[in-house]
Amino acid sequence: MPDANEPLDLLLLPTWLVPVEPAGVVLENHALGIRDGRIALIASRETALRHPSREVRELPGMLLAPGLVNAHGHAAMTLFRGLADDLPLMTWLQNHIWPAESRWVDEIFVRDGTELAIAEQLKSGISCFSDMYFYPEVASERIHTSGIRAQLCVPVLDFPTPGTRDSDESLRKGVALFDDLKLHPRIKVAFGPHAPYSVNDDTLEKIRVLAEELDANIQMHVQETACEVEQALERHGERPLARLSRLGLLGPGFQAVHMTQVSDEDLALLVESNSSVIHCPESNLKLASGFCPVERLWQAGVNVAIGTDGAASNNDLDLLGETRTAALLAKAVAGSATALDAHRALRMATLNGARALGLDAEIGSLEPGKSADLVAFDISGLHQLPIYDPVSQLIYASSRDCVKHLWVGGKQLLEDGRLTRMDEEELKDRARGWSRKISGLDAGQ
Ligand SMILES: CSC[C@H]1O[C@@H](n2cnc3c(O)ncnc32)[C@H](O)[C@@H]1O
Ligand SMILES: [Zn+2]
Image (cartoon, rainbow, N blue to C red; front, side, top):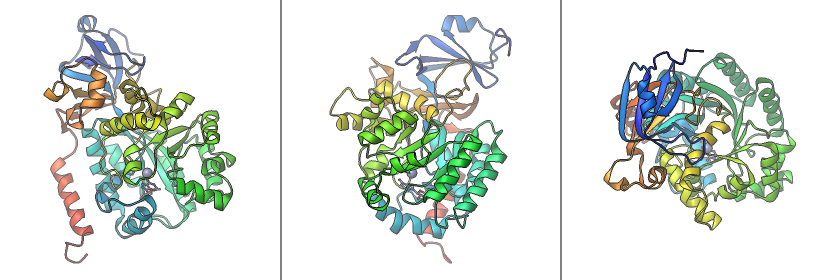
């Protein structure tokens, strides 16, 4: 335990400090101190300035909040952004994305696509993301080097995929990756069975046993469309979530992505098992998949987090924009303007995300002892004035251009909108190279 009088490494003095917990609080004239990568102090400006600090930074016009948590995505799919637009889920997936993945996805693709995704997410205020994609061992190296935090889901499907011949090989590799990274301070390995329609009961049973043994989370696309539920009823005689429940997969570490279809029975299963739902509104809108009933889930006590999904179905990794979409859509779906207000929307994009990933003791809110994973938004622009409620301004009147600074574990990864550890021009060159290759403009492809 460091002595409370030891100097702080950094003292931040924003105009507004939004801790997220306690809910609804906005602190003015307050400061946040960081020591050894952790939040060491939250106090009035006056008190904090009496404390010795190695560095003091004024953040005028800025709102300091916990870093955003993007709870579902497929990072390397940034390289497929805009490849197959305006199609329904199954046509998009089976006729376009899966063929493109089997043609193009290799270790270099995952390296370049994941780096591009990390850079975009840091610039969007995201300090922690969940990834579910092929070659997770390659993604883990990029996450490690970049300094961002992540849940890395090992993809499992019942057919050959880039990098693996079958689900048993995926699971073997997943366990090895779990072992390699079990002490990593920023990477948490989880299992990512793709969806109830692409993973059979035997494989799900193996995942349940491994997840229990390793105390690992499970993230899965579930009930993304009405069609998925209808086909499951024909094939298995039960709804996908009921089948997962029967197989023992639900629990506090289970993250059901999408859930646009929620029956009363589904709701009871989610509540009883304490599972989380990851809402991906823009992907659901673009693929015309359906609407997740966020307000109904929230009122029933289900932890609802938010994700962008991959850049091929969104088409950006802008969690602030996603949160605004979620807040607006929740009102339309619930038929009530009071649904998912701005403060709850920000909670969904921070603390609820952390809770879904089992990281809420470490991140998701600004509380002494937690890791200093922070984002400073500049809300002093003309289009953001006047300010009555800074959180309302952030959610309803701001875009990701207002993200100025970002820290993970006290390390600054974004400074004045610029990446401190990544070369943006190089990333852009590599992305252009991939688009030339994929669209067949490069000779020899
Ligand atoms: C298990 S690796 C990821 C796998 O999932 C595909 N994918 C991307 N977005 C979605 C979605 O919204 N629903 C279902 N599957 C999706 C991705 O292309 C990979 O093949
Ligand atoms: Zn997805």
